[in-house]
Amino acid sequence: MADFSMELNEDQLQIQKWVHDFSENVIRPAAEEWDEREETPWPIIEEAAKIGLYGWEIMAEGMLNDPTGLTMPVMLEELFWGDAGIGLSIMGSGLAAAGIAASGTPEQVMEFVPQCYGTADDIKLGAFASSEPDAGSDVAAMRTSAKYDEAKDEWVLNGTKTWITNGGIADVHVIVAVVDPELGSRGHASFVVPPNTPGLSQGQKFKKHGIRASHTAEVILDDVRVPGNCLLGGKDKLDERLARVREGKPGNSNAAMQTFEATRPAVGAQAIGVARAAYEYSLEYAKERVQFGRPIIMNQSIAFMLADMATEIDASRALIYRAAWLGKQRKYKYAEGSMAKLKAGRTATWVTERAIQILGGYGYVREYPVERWHRDAKIHDIFEGTEQIQQLVISRAISGLRIE
Ligand SMILES: Cc1cc2nc3c(=O)[nH]c(=O)nc-3n(C[C@H](O)[C@H](O)[C@H](O)COP(=O)(O)OP(=O)(O)OC[C@H]3O[C@@H](n4cnc5c(N)ncnc54)[C@H](O)[C@@H]3O)c2cc1C
Image 1 (spheres, rainbow, N blue to C red):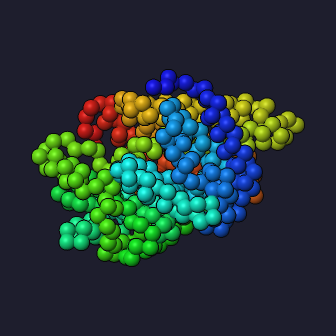
Image 2 (cartoon, rainbow, N blue to C red; image 1 turned 45 degrees about the vertical axis):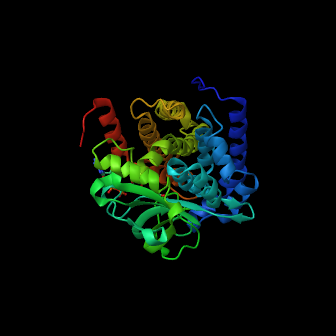
Image 3 (cartoon, protein in one colour; image 1 turned 120 degrees about the vertical axis):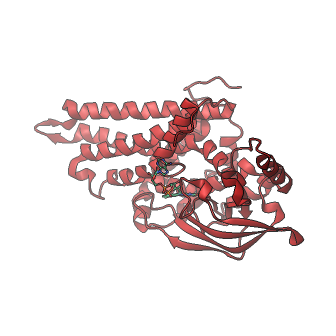
């Protein structure tokens, strides 16, 4: 077991610099273009794959070979410092990989995770689909169904997923579906839909406020048949779990929730990457911009704003590292992952808004990156559990009560 430390080890410092350099030299210069194009930045994903920054090996390195839990947040902060839309295009497949790793058997992980990435010469994408038009925060309201066809040992999926990162353009879709409608979210299971499976198609592609380089779309499942081994965890384990729940014994937390819990500190790290980009930019700007004969930073009202921005970012990072470390040691006591994500999302939204204030009119126009960072920041209050859902999780954890 690794001791908790905010000090990064040699490997982490190297990874931090490696990702930072890629962000600075490749992602930042491309950020404005892909934000305007609102398209998946394939050439940048390819560049990332060439240096090993897009691929299952780096995910394994970040997730498995790191006893501290800090490597993933360190990488993500630097990546999203470069650009959140491109960053999510590079990391989106990781959601599918995390979904497979959370519920799959070792054999399923070995088979399907590499298919979410492909190779540098033949890039593939993954998508993780839980949300539905009428089941966002309320995961238990999910309607997408998975029915078992025993004669063929196949599962048949039907339903509509929405807001799915890489939805419809992914090669591998991980779909959370209802196998027993009577059991609410405990009657859910996750399925892999392999590449080119008939019946899966993309619905509407969304035009978004921010992270516009990342593809977000509906996924339609119309009698999608997948082989029995595409049920993550396998049928025996599912049957055991459902039997336990039907007997009123505590079941394992449901499939989607397991994935989200593991990814919350990581999403917090993405948020503070965006916040730090805006903070650093506005700090430099405030030193250079002269009004009333002096740099605007010489006014306490501007300098104190920057002081608060730096403090909020560092406080968020401390919560993220704590949560990532606790998660790795399996020592969560009360919703520390949710706390980290809640704080970091709010920090990113607030810091980027303040950055616009510091730049004045220049902060409000697209010739400068600050308004883009503000648009990109807001998603971190929404996806992977909204601000209010994090509060709900935390309030239940600290009170032991079923707060509604
Ligand atoms: C760009 C983008 C990418 C996404 N990527 C994915 C993805 O890859 N895969 C995926 O499965 N999903 C994805 N999502 C979906 C995302 O996780 C949901 O949008 C989110 O969970 C909220 O659901 P909703 O949008 O339906 O909002 P709702 O759940 O309808 O919430 C609306 C408002 O009501 C509040 N609210 C709801 N319930 C409560 C309550 N009990 N108490 C207090 N307040 C409440 C919410 O906090 C929010 O403010 C993505 C979304 C976006 C926008």
